Length: 277
Image (tube, one colour):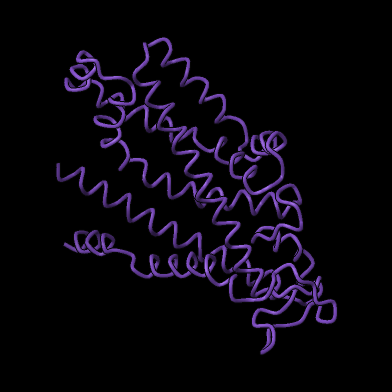
């Protein structure tokens, strides 16, 4: 009985996570229009602690961290959602193509995915980023092109299961093309299964951008993101400027927690629906 109550509790909608994520997104979209220019360097107020004039303090270059948080959040969220969309599209097309291919080609395509999965993702992103350049679009494309492998395997497995049913074969016999079968028969069956992975890919993309920017390998220093803000705050604790690393770090952690909670809820809801079928 207690386990059933526990399951019921976990199925509740995470309203707090949705609310916090909405606040973060709306803030990153609208607040930059009303706050100071994040790129403005007030050299007379470098490394100022949070106070009435500067709510979140300033960094070592005199930039207002309150403005930087919202401007940088816009960049980080853009990279996260754009790269997740790219990964999802590639995974759906690749996984479906593999499932509908002859057995030998299906095995070959999956072996290629296994090889790509064996390479560290950050290393792949660095190679691809060298082609597309160090900018927001280039970073998004690089992360998106390197983040679809696991999702494609899930899509392929789900599509193979649906393919064995008669209506897919009937649709192909009646002249239904690849995209017709994908849109009407396959996608409605596997999209709920990969919804969790799509949400998690947003989190992963933002984490990868932050990691690369922190290491000095990501976006250029003039492009403000939460990762680049952390990169400039490497010596924050030595300088006793705790706010430079604590505030961007808290925003990143809050975003990751919200996405994880929402993703877990979506996964549980999908699993619950499957058990009821």
